[in-house]
Amino acid sequence: MKIAAILSIMTPVFAQWSNFPTPGVPRLPDGKPNLAAPAPKMPDGHPDLSGVWVTRGGYTGDLARDLKNGEVSFQPWAAQLYQHRRDTMSREDPQARCVLSGVPRENVVPYPFKIVNTTNGMIVILYEALHSYRQIYMDGRKPPKDPNPTWMGYSIGHWDGDTLVVESSGFVDGNWLDNNGHPGTESLHLTERFHRRDFGHIDLQMVIDDPKAYTKPWTVNLLLNANPDTDLIEYVCDENEKDVGHLVGK
Amino acid sequence: MDELARKSRAVTAFLLLASVNVVAQAPAAGNTNSFANIIPLPPAPTGPAPRLADGHVDLSGVWRPADNALIYDLSLGLPKGETLPLTPEAVKIKAGRLAKDDPEANCLPTGVPRIAPFPWRILQTPTHIFFLFEGNIHSYRQIFMDGRPHPPDPDPTWYGHSTGRWDKDTLIIDTVGFNDRSWFDYEGHPHTERLHTSERYTRSSLGMLTEEVTIDDPGAYTRPFTVRSAHRLLSNDELIEYVCQENEKDTRHLRGPATPP
Image 1 (spheres, rainbow over the protein chains, first blue to last red):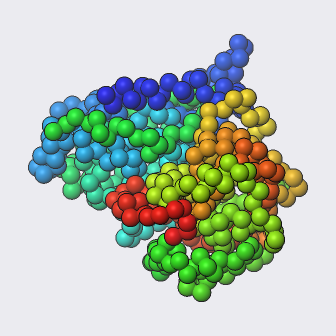
Image 2 (cartoon, rainbow over the protein chains, first blue to last red):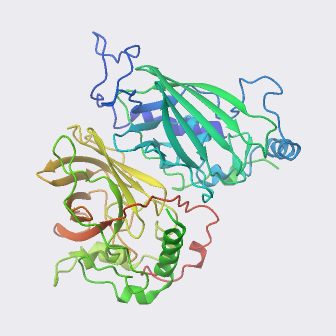
Image 3 (cartoon, rainbow over the protein chains, first blue to last red):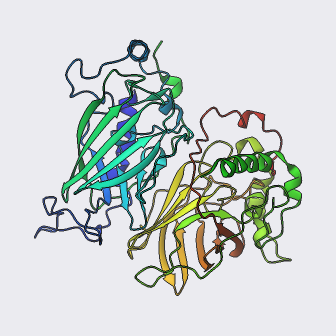
């Protein structure tokens, strides 16, 4: 049901307004984007991560799909909650109620997102999913001592060579890290490392360190594909929403 | 953001939603803060508007609507003595609208130009301008500054398709491709898919941003008209996360015809 819904919403991406050629895209002689060209740079010499990106699929359901048994080591209560969410087929998923999915989940949904690399102290990620956004402060500030818990968390970034490192904390309790319902809590500390290896690809490593839910940190490695010559479309979850009533879990 | 600012914003939002008296005090137009008698805004910083390396005015920053008149009644943004030129059909649509059906109350986007009362951020890059909204939903608008045209037949959306250009120090945003679902205000002033907006933003000083929006919708109004409002810089402040859908208890309590709360 959910997969069918996702596919039906995805289709318009290819039929939509955005076949406008993205300015600044390196091209092959036939006019197609040269995805193997070097990563572009910002005026300050750091890589420019700007562009429309989408995860190579498969992690929407299970963020830990590539991990070996035991790499995700639940605390007992979290194991129980995860099993409950599986048994009830994710019926209680807040995202199905159009509440923000937060990170890391928004990074692995099958919808594209746009990274906006500005020169004035901030990187912003615009997500097509739920038409939401996230701000990453690049101005050297420290994380707040006692932030209001949020779905997106409070994100601070810095450069480690050519890699953007984003540290996020201040998340809500009761979070879902994926459709299966891997739990996230207020103790979640997420470290994301974005490395644009060439024009068309970002290697994204996400370290999930949430001692309240897991006995040790676990790491997910993803590949993001550039989507040049297209753009985000408007996804309004609450508009004519008919999905929740059809979730079949017990 | 410090705790005091956070609390004061929450209290302001609450009072704004709860107090009918505030509405009665909303000024016809201009820079007066309509709830200044409840929670004074910090003074807007003074000084010249900053500029980017390319010479254009830098509109970046967190802004707060200086008054909330437009969201109560769009006509409060008109010059004195003018009224909204609704078609007879639009008068009928407006008269039939109920408060509980306001898309804003149902956690849907509010379209253009219904921003207040929440703060918003302008981000500026060489190819785009972005508006990030704190509320009513955690959402954004993209304005393409790369010279592209509007698509010939865009899918109708809440925020439309926006292209921008500079007229000296004024940013002009041209938007088409709206759906007909958003309401301009609590009064339920309608529009159709023929809506075409032209927004003009001028940062008259470091701390002030004026907004003029020309609304051209021959489907609902007999002629174009222009509403004015203003925004003040919220320096040393940040957008916070407003999730309308989370634990939402408001809509079921709305009664009666569309009207300011």
